[in-house]
Length: 367
Image 1 (spheres, rainbow, N blue to C red):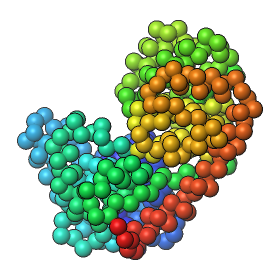
Image 2: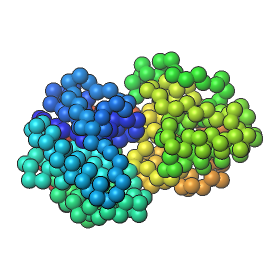
Image 3: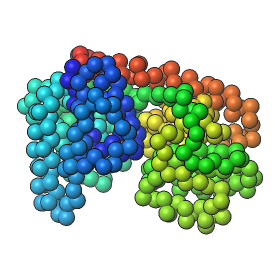
Image 4: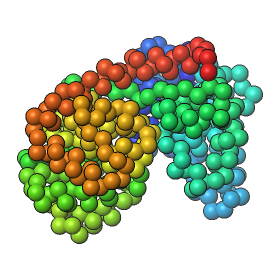
């Protein structure tokens, strides 16, 4: 089977991690795999196996006007179609909605199967990019399948295509990675850990406010934030304003988050919305008890409230504080939930998840 995977880049992120793992999985199975990215290849965070052909197309650029944007996108479509034709794929799979739109335009009248995948909760992009929202509505019916990650997102896209399929993210925690030396120096006290891009979506502003209130009574705890992003300086300033700058560690991007999470005591997801949060899955795969906002979408599909973690109403800082306080105080409850949490490794094992992708890419499925 000849498979082409398309994404804007392989920089640090949940969608990028999933796609790179898919590429390696199929390459190891003996398939010919090509990855096309829109960037110049300088920001690859997830290295691929040597047997995977990676072609950075270097077609990203800033547009000063709508006419520049139109011309740039026509160029992208031309270059993308050229490389897809050269790869002679049996199946093209693309991730994230603006990439999906360009792929659908670039593959018109080709005979290969086209699968597009949404990787986030779609509501929040509607008002920001209305033209792209219209293109999505118009072009998505051209795909053979749309892959989403939760039933709630499937309902949103039901009218977009005759075949909308739910495939959650896989989780794979290499046992050896748990015991590797952490890339950052960790404090000796109890550790609450969070991970994600430092953007509005991930809600770290809410988390810092909550932790500041908790720290008054839990000064033996520190907050570790893994990730980087545009709000880094703003979040650091907020921590200083709340006088907890010495208790909040911004560790940046790390290659091996598992060695850090396995040395922490509790994981928190403070996102305003998600697709299907990799960070939550990976923390649970490390055996960490978790507390999460019940945001759209994903956490309430992964967490069994009171069994392997705690869910709180979305963006409710008081309820998040209460849930974190419970697990900070009750060590036995943390340990019990952590053991249950580790079972997600079996539920979302790569072999199980990739079997679902293969039924779409290699065969036929009824809508």
